[in-house]
Length: 144
Image 1 (cartoon, rainbow, N blue to C red):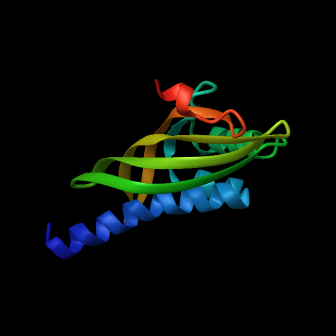
Image 2: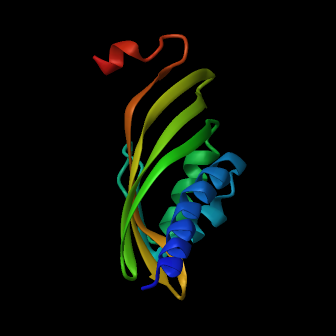
């Protein structure tokens, strides 16, 4: 592969994380599911993993329309390319409103990517939150 194609692949992969965060902000459930391979998987950490686009769409719909609001900010995206597959970690700062409570969290996504029909998609995505606490309580006790 050439340096130019590697750079284009890296940008396309990093754009997946940005689009994912954008679609969560917008509650664009179908667009979220389309970021995944047909047999893709999302492990939200609070429920069993969602596998396949239909389950992803249903799971995202449930999580994003159940009265809670999630506002992720992604950064520090590290990607390792290996031809038509790749892996990466993307850090997330999370603001949320859950059951009327302002929440704050931080953690990372462990991602696996696959090139499908000349487009990059998530093969799998797992979120790990280092903390997710009420804003009024703060997070310092969770880090000790």
